Image (cartoon, rainbow, N blue to C red; front, side):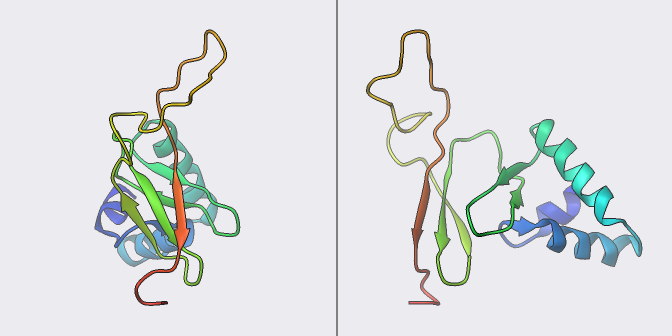
Length: 116
């Protein structure tokens, strides 16, 4: 699964991972794909990107605080390096006492070069 994710072009859906694994192994259940993706995400080896109106996408770029741009037309998703400063990139002005932000998740929405 990690090989399939590493060799994928960009952010892939569970179905795209399943097809890549099928091509290599010949057989794998859909439930196995979801179970392993969940385990890899929990272990911090894979990042799951869930956005409204789109299937969950998975990537192996973890450990940094990058963001994403998603095309509203075709759904193409690309990485955007940290917006400003150091992690968590965006510092909330008024967190309640005792709260500490360690990550920011920013999604830019628009139109990719192929769709515009």
